[in-house]
Length: 570
Image (tube, rainbow, N blue to C red; front, side, top):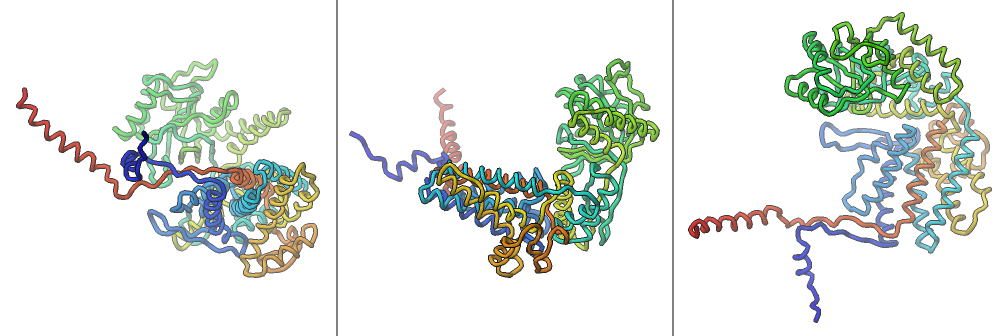
């Protein structure tokens, strides 16, 4: 005979275990869509020249004021787990777009919301979600192909300034500053953004070298703000081989300690034993030291280590055919750098003290290799090395009257800088959301295999209108009428939200980087169309508020107390 377990008994059986909440079909999709809409509403208010700012509470410091889509998206954390799941998926869209293109996160979020909303509606009415997704991806491929056809290369500094100005919310000063910075260091040069110490923005060009390798261990960090390692007047040790024994680096550490200078070690790798010794010296003795892996792979790594050595005046240990051993290091074998900044991802060496004639000879040698090279990959790597050695680093110092103002402006400058890089890389298309409107003809001309795929195409057609609609909506005017009028126009003619007129957008400088628009539509369609295929959502149940994990321990304590009587039994 089976006994039915009551609700109270069941709860007692699983007490202390975290349960799961399962939702299916329309119930799950509608809750996730609420989260998508909440996040998209918060992000979409920032779109366009008339877009508004968002104020974000922070756990430390004052509130942050920003118009950066990805910053707003990251700040959204909803109480309802199902709604938060939907919001988190759209956050991923914004993050992916930000990582690949550096801008266009608001456009990507708006596109994702539109595709997810219409996708859910289609599936709820009985459409096959897999076929709908396939139709969406076919349509997006057609949009991307049309964007590439429309794209025009960036040819002069004025166009660079126009791209930067649009991305910086129409701030012409920022656009001109970025164009000037890229003009100074070249298209392949390194540009960084820092907090300024004055009310105005400044541009400083510093000779330096940046590469994409960070500290091997976080225990080297000496600056809590930004999780960085920062040193002034630093020694540099370069090794082509792995550092595998503690004894090999002891002489270098002793020399650095005697000279009372920080030490940067660049090697193929540092194994666990010597790394442990370095960390111990850093934490216990306070030795100023940081170790990073050498950038690149194979021959490219060897060349980059040699570049760093020449720019800082260091000797290279472990080179094939050379007799130099780390154990025999002398003070003259160290290179020197005026300033060093190392994060978990990057190392920036400024004011290298290398011999200028040797650096010029190295640059000449790379130029010769470039002329002889036939490989695109090889040319790309040679250009990167050339930029690090010759062009230096441009530092944009952002000024303002308060920390909040500087933070808001820095976000816009970072976006503008990434947009400019993207424009140089893949060219530009007409801005203001008009480029996506011009792609509707490419989708309308497609032939789909079935009705469900056609639905996918229609979903993309509707989504293509959304960026232009939101830009117009943020001006306070009738967005539907503006979008319809723009679609009736042809070529580069569209609505300039800044001045409120229909103009030739390219001629007036309203342009978007092709890479930014392309990345936004690809990322948005990929995640949002996958969202429509969801039939079941599993989340953790909230823990009971009355459950006290120490209560059970208290009971154990009482039981243990009773064991004292066991002594009498012995």
